[in-house]
Length: 419
Image (cartoon, rainbow, N blue to C red; front, side, top):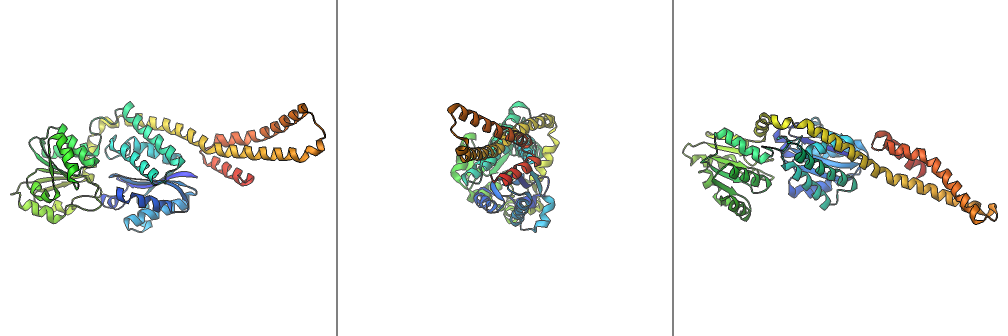
């Protein structure tokens, strides 16, 4: 059995397709149960963010598991499996571990080094534990991935400056408007992304911050911290008619602001332009609203281009982080291999010991009366013979652990000795 990851991210699919395979928190338990229902999957963790949707599994057989996971994604996206295949990436074994370590370290994000992904990896793992789909192998892998992510941010400069999607969204809006000083700004959503944007606005000295959220109490709580105003969703149109910028990044599973909603708001703005930065996946604002006069609509694709242009300093840290990932991968594989091989070696030795004792008992009547010293010598002799016979196979198995050869040797031992 080995770890396999199958997924799509911001580099492999257009935004509209990525939206269709995004799994929100409410749908996560069902998604985990769907993955676990396949015969060739024994553990699973689903990681779905604004940049990626990935499934990590422990697979008994690679090709059947790959086919099952490809079908899982195709059903999410409502497209034939063969149409989705070109967009999917797959890694197994050590490559799967290396991929997750790079994700946790922020190397695979649209904003290199962004901090939010580490919390998202932790949450995905915790949800899998809650649903009892994460077992010993994925627990070890994800625990190690979180350690890698923490090391990357404490021992290198990969996470300095604009290091999250929310702060990058605010920086992009500031660049587009020239300055946020004196601007009226509405933030829609009070989850992790929304709260991050509010903090970034407050840091930039914005004083007119309005926060709209499905739960008004949550919006009020965040508004109180920064001296902003909580807005009820019923008053959304009135606020949109007044502000200069709408920042939105909710976790809603469907569009919240339609083309007609924006058109109605623009009718009451007396020709004043409106900048909308929508970093939600799926998108909160109908993309066709960008066709309305006076509306500038930026989304995750625009954010990636903006982040790419300003990441030169953090990219100098990438080499250091990759070296760290390689070191941690080697350490993880050593621990993982030892954990995988140890039960098999113990089982083999136990089987050999059972045979040794049974044979001694079978021949005891033919050995005559042996004194205590002779019995001890016989025990030592037979025990030594078994130990010498098993030494080379067990050393070879340990040395090859974590490799295809190791898997073949382990499978052979299980079959030959019925372990």
